[in-house]
Length: 439
Ligand code: 4AD
Ligand code: MG
Image (tube, rainbow, N blue to C red; front, side):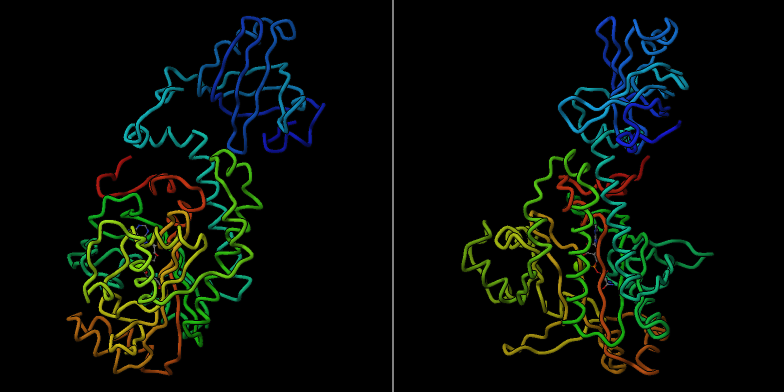
């Protein structure tokens, strides 16, 4: 019977057939050990010369690293560990593999990513990208259980949603258009028909950032909700993140173990309320507690600055829980956010970035949206955006405007945090960064 390696435990003592690849092999003369993987898991196949026909043993000896094989054998449980083995009776060599370039020795990341098509077969990418799959699935399940409708938004857009300096231009039948930075503006139109919507797809940021937190092509889920203010918005985000983390802990134990991920903080945050700090409070704490190095003096502008990478990491380390940083100065946030003037006379946005602990940084950006037609139109004009291109968007405020809010979660940022890998490029199959668009 043909089985997946992941189902081995259900077939102890039985003869099965496994199709897969040899990811490692060693031989002690009379026994060949073939380490097999088939995408679902890993198992060791033991080929003993006295137990098989000479041509079977010879085929096992010829099975080099990354050869594809069909192995017949009896499943047995490892005497000590929760692992299964195959006592082999047949070996069929399907596709040979000569001098596989990724060997047992250490390779630098550039080499691995130059050969990403092959590197994908290794255990670290296997674990990371399966966790990615689980996060994706959890988000989709969460939204459907909460009554959201999946509402796909266009990738080719005539305007900017976030930052006009980060646009990739495409030649759209001789007219310049842009690759989407976020589907949000379209999702806002969507809620007027469907109440609560989400989209999930690739978005593009032509950021000149070479950090381990930035991709040029990333996957983002934008959620948008009618009749939701910013407090309700953050509540949905917190429940969603708890759901994702809970699911990853439950379904990806093998993957987390392969990655050597310490899950103490992840386990804790599933049951604890997240931290909420106003932007100015967060800045004050960082300053007073000296949490950020290299900053000699804080002048008045400090309170109005964006959060730096170092500051986000410091806050995550301090609280060891996800932290909502609320109400950034409006001047450094997007045009669509609802604004208010605080007690110090600073114009603020009703927004929050959710910072993940353990150097996860910002994984979610969200806000309540400006629902006034006049205020939003003025903002578009003041920012010198082409008003005529935003007329359709302003219709959401012209015909039956409502309090509404939403957020976007970066899939790769989230997976980087959950897996604990150093660089975000590990979290997507074929990364696109400032200096890489191949393979
Ligand atoms: O904070 P951002 O820019 O928010 C928006 O685009 C809103 N329109 C979302 C919304 O309200 N519907 O991006 C959302 C998230 C960030 O928190 C981060 O996780 C991720 O997208 N992100 C990136 N991830 C990797 N590389 C980049 N260059 C990223 N830019 C944003
Ligand atoms: Mg953001």
